Image (cartoon, rainbow over all chains, first blue to last red; front, side, top):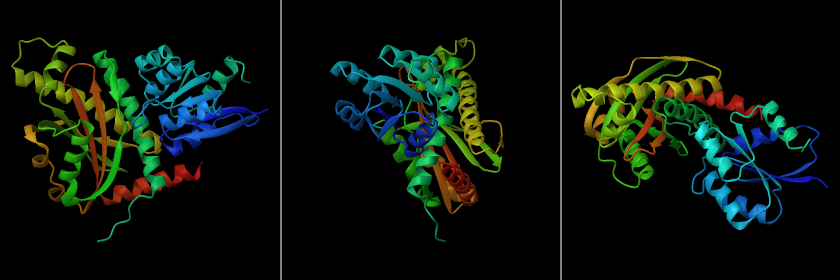
Length: 121
Length: 210
């Protein structure tokens, strides 16, 4: 069964760039969300076992989404994909439950490295 | 003169390009000040020249929930493939907390401290944002040294795009907020028609690559 993967970003270009960086042979079912609320709904429906999450979004930020995932006890593997490359942003995201951090602009190598590290490849 | 707006895809792409550049600028400022710089979603708009001041004022007001009041502004020109003005706008209160963060001695007159700090911070932010945009569009541009444009003036009094001789302007706004109380900086980029078109071609090239 393909792995349900959710890509969350307010920018459609950015979502496409992330998806384009996926390994070509990765057996996944990709869903997309353009905001935090939509993302949480999708995760609750089982569409995001792996979630690629932007931090800087209007309304609900990626930090808010991580906090809410934890509060609701949702089971997913969150990878932050962000242009906010300050060490404190990564630290805060990890404290809120993000397992990995990939910098924008997304490099395929970096993303594959994370997937390999956690046994998704 | 009629003017072609950006398509939703072009606008989305530009916003993301600026988002990445803003992230680099925020990290540069965070490193200098050793604080976390909170970032928000950048905004882009094409406006007619006579609407620039109002548009900037509205963007700032909506970013901070209210009238920005008087601001201190530092400008830098940039030129080559893209040209325009990069203007950093600071609220009045922010300057003091900034002085503390930078560890400046109190020996200088207060206005002198303000001026030096604001020029320094503006240079960091403008440089990083402009370099970030240039890198992604695979181009480069040069910029002038920062100069103080206005101290404690209302926003609508500092921007006069007609004086620049433009009909339309691309307006890009990014907002940097420090944990330090009261400090926020709005960086506004203004670019004339030919830069709007240069940018459009660059964005189309990025979108075609998707």
